[in-house]
Length: 367
Image (cartoon, rainbow, N blue to C red):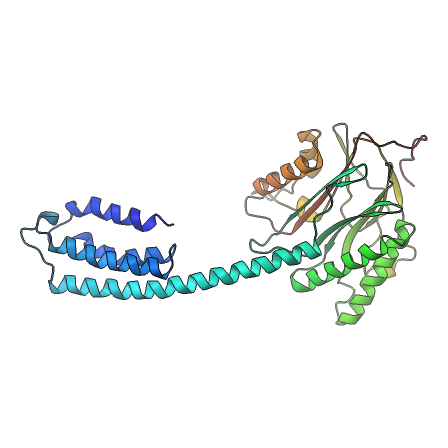
């Protein structure tokens, strides 16, 4: 954009010798200040305005320009052009000043949003014990930084506890709900002895918050979530699924869903089912990788409306460490959804490093 006024003037100079005597394209220099307003500040636009007026006079007063035998420096048509250019330049200067103020305001808003995201969705540690972790967050809105998708990883005395969730709805209410769930999880993850009790406590926290908000849609304010726990030495992964897309287990080039068919209702709907939370247990050996994600991944559509085939794509990439896996997923999602992402997207990849010592007895495949 900064070179646009220069290129415009160069194009006019190239066309000027070809114009008729009575209509030189120097009149088109009136647009230069407006073009400058898109890329320069008020001083730059004012300078472009002065340049345009002077250059119009030079072209008008040069006899040889466009085949003229005499100059028309003070011809009334050219004088009108000078005045119009000066007026457009004045308006362009005001426009540039307004644009600069809006850009500064937007930069401040982005800065505040970045700070809020660090507090709400702080990056997970890249290494916890024998686990390597990586996180990904993509917002469907181009200027947004935070939304209703959430994730967390907390090292506790019971092992590393993981959370990924997706709040129903969008906007500030979804962000506030996500913040409430994350705050409750970060506290309760250290205290509750098992995942079923932890999920029940999150259900209580979300139900209490929904009651405080009131309204007719209390039950509809729900959150799908997965709670997972990996002991310090690996070997097992415990999973409680609350209406969320099942995680993927990547093992030796194979990809499988960890889905026992016993998913609990989403949080804030659990009170509708007695004893809804079941802990499923799966093997998790050194070199295995766990991929947790929100439905923004699998609901990304291509131009034909086909949903993103996550398991198929991940299987075709072969073994990748968490950082490279999520980077590949990020690029592939943006390329697949050619009309842009329709929903916020979050993913969490966890790999058990080869140095971990698995239990001596083979773990069961499910509880």
